[in-house]
Length: 499
Ligand code: MG
Image 1 (spheres, protein in one colour):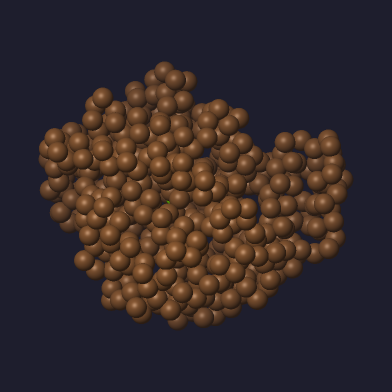
Image 2: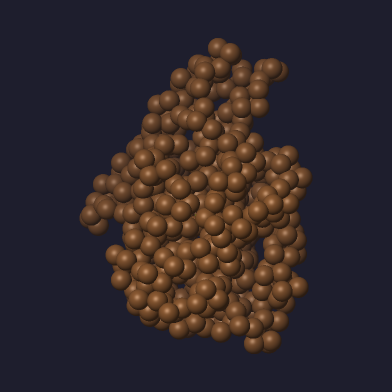
């Protein structure tokens, strides 16, 4: 984009090399998870940390900081320009506070710790990974101290992923959410709900190539622009946007329980659509991505769950499923619907259903809050984790690979990230509630594969803005809401209890 304002143009020009470094770091991150040979790890660690240092040098260059400072004082900026300055200013103030050595230590530990975590998870050996977790937590505590916070050290880390998010916000969210979800779960189980009956479809094997075709069929239905988008395979599905016109997702093929692969694909496609539908004028600017991780997750969860696990959507893709999955070739639409929406309290977060998912996040939130509040040591985590699993979900992991070792996040230095999954779920329900009031033929459109009205609604309300607005501002301006859990609880009650 070009601005009327010469200072803004100078800022955007100076930002281009930083954007390019981000572009390269993203591409390397995608490659690390997909195609990089295993022994490339150490070298990749060096390259990654060096590029980040280069990025930091450019960002903190005196002239650049001076330009951003002078733009901050200008009264006549547009919303877009204000967004650019807000995002840059956030990055500068955070980075100024974090010394080079800490950035480098984190980057190196991220690569090393992640490799050890992978092996430790395979062997289900928490003690093998514990020294790395301890190291990463020490680094993160130092970072939190350098960034600074008003009330809780964890606030400093939360803000990185969700602007202005605090422990106070999350205590309010989980305080209002956890017990209500537990009650719903209990009702479902006690009443012998058909949603709780495990489907035999989850047990049977599938042909990877045919489910890959099925996934591509679904992407075609969702009309993702294949000239700006691609899908590969990785152990943990993710989305990586190199820019607005090169957005990549991955999916997974485990050979059984085909809904995991389908849901994973739809989830990541939802993330991708957010980037793909940002206004093109935001390309190569600091505001080209989504507003926050929570908002991003609201898009993936909206498509994965609210659309993807709805009866009309299952009816839409049922013929594709019956064609590509041999074991499902006789399954009725209703059987497929119950299979996609099976509710079961279990140990693994990524396999969790809509009802129990946020309970998994509640536990991770409690653990992280306690770690950074100095209330829990590394060696106490597994038992605390298992106790809380038993209390909230009624299941106790028998192995650390089923418990504390299951997620990649901590080994990658991602503390403060998990809560954004729950925020995404909550916001997806807010979106669905507002959208249904605006779009008359919502369900018929889904059943008929006409996603244009939904996509356009999302584009106008959320996607086009990129990160011009902070998440709390966007939620307030667009929906007159905050991370209000009521919509989600109502959605779950209506869908699963039919009330
Ligand atoms: Mg996601």
